Amino acid sequence: MILTPIDLKNLKTLFENPLKPGYVLNFSDKTMREFFESELNINIENSIYKDEGKSKLKRLLSFFKKNKQESVLIVVSILWNYRKTLSDFPITPQDEAIFKNFTLKFEEIKSITDKTTENLNRINTQHLLDDLDALKIKGPQERGYGFEVWLNELFKTFNLSPRKPFKLNGEQIDGSFQLNHNTYLVEAKWHGVKTGNRDLHAFQGKIDQKPRWTRGMFVSWTGFTRDGLNAWGKGKSVICVSGRDLYLMLKNDINFCQLIEDKGRIASEEGDYYVEIDKIYPNLNNV
Image (tube, rainbow, N blue to C red):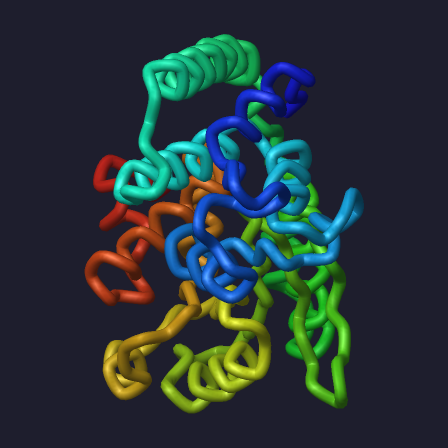
């Protein structure tokens, strides 16, 4: 998203503390970090937002410059709603006009972009289906490694900036990707039996060693046992995906990003970390 100098000036007007240049509203470093983590799941202290300076305002403006219009609009709207609760920062008619004009401008851009990219979202995934079928006839060890490679290609196809499997302090991570500014660590299993709570607990342990905003995706080719999921418990930050989910996703031309977002929403709202794809999209072609 490209912000014009006028856009940046207007956003500065809306959110800079007039009595403390460089400050954002009434935030301290601590409260701004906590607000962005709890309300937006964003690490505003990431070094990528300190390229123009470390002040709270410069980090905020850097975030606006570096992110997609949907994310910018969400952050602007939430900060605006927060400002409206603060008696020390009365909103003037000029402020109201700036906010309204800004949101209208980028809603129009989003409408145009959605129409332009509608066909681009129809990604050719036949090679992924072909490679997945080829994996089925390989031996267990070769198949397990090949599955990790295949997942990396899946993430690459959907422009998710994947990282290949890596080790960190002796800990094996089967890859990672980024979706909507969230980093997902990946665990991949192609076993002959469904995954139970032991493997789920082990993977959640890896996630727990990382910053709070880190998420995980556990991919089990054969799926997950319901007893294992129940024993695993609640309050997790991992989304579970089966091989069947992936296969039907590709067969039915479903965008992988949409599938993960829908699974994540169900996990957040209902606490169910593994919902099969045909329960999310009831009219799938299962052939």
